Length: 385
Ligand SMILES: *Cc1c(COP(=O)(O)O)cnc(C)c1O
Image (cartoon, rainbow, N blue to C red):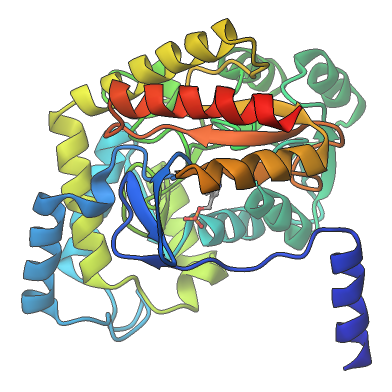
């Protein structure tokens, strides 16, 4: 037990000790953190659907129809008609033959990577990939070759250097800390020229990018080019769960091999029904994501005009660079006092000296909300100096 205490002290001394904050009420643009009501500029609930009346109604009906727990793993007693329906709809959205639900995006990455790759494989992995991809790669036992973030020259060189029959490039579709989009056309070309598989994790892109909200493939007009599509139901889709979409054989293989699919209780029909309804809403109404992306563009212009250094993005993720860790923390804390929640992101989550405020927009933010945030950011920044 001494070891635990020591390690906790260690974390504290480095200023990296983390604690939970609890929300009261639902996740919407206004949230109550403990007892402070703030404007939320940090949610993955991009389309504001977590608190949508239509989805809440469907979820209540699901309780009446199915009860609460699923009661078993998917291969035993935990598969319901809604699981099947949602998998069919995800396959349609992603232009694939089939799809499979996992309990989280994290488990989808662990399941798909470890069931396919082993020590005979070489995985080319972007240095900024999500932790669940990194963990999946490590658990698989494959040779992991990390390439510089979105650096296609580096990737090409490494592809030349590391030869083998079984190779795969794995990347985020939208990178969570910088908000930038993968260079998919180049990656597809490299994969075709060298006979390498491609897997894209569209957690932040599904429901957001592309005319139909299908994600990065659709954004680039490259439908059907990626071998394995992964994503989550917990961001734009406002529910819980992860998925993999691909060929019929891929999905049948995962049902038989992916341990995080096989040995875990199925998602509750409640959250599955909620995700299904969110998918229908996203399909029917592209105004939500259009507004969101227009607002993001406008907000970025306004920040630049006020002299702030941002990483420009075509997504709702807007990093405002601060640099110094303590300054970023103080910035975030002072904004909270002013009624705005924007977290500071520090190493080890991002590289040294790039500490930042990570702003994410929601479709429900109005211009009035955003102007309020701009004014407060400018005001607090002046006080910080
Ligand atoms: C959020 C995220 C995940 C994890 O999804 P969960 O459903 O929250 O487990 C996986 N990959 C990426 C790229 C993500 O951004």
